[in-house]
Image (cartoon, rainbow, N blue to C red):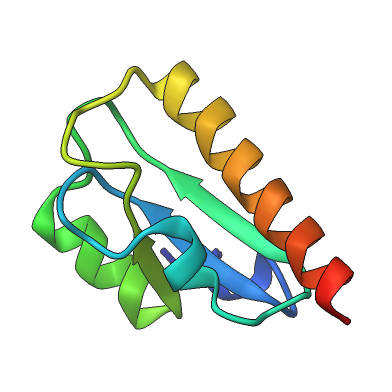
Length: 92
């Protein structure tokens, strides 16, 4: 918890969590900068962990209501972030 602020100095911080949370694109918004992603255990983060991450500037992002294996969630999340950032660059 005490190291969260030092992980990234700029950009958007996303915490992946299954459910009806905002999509990755919505959570990223129009931010073309760096993205720091937090992916938790299968089944998602507990309420305390989400509260701590959000207190340190992380925005929730969902890959849908189904729980994914952590390895699958990492790959899917990075692909969606990469695609979104590419789309943002094309619009400039």
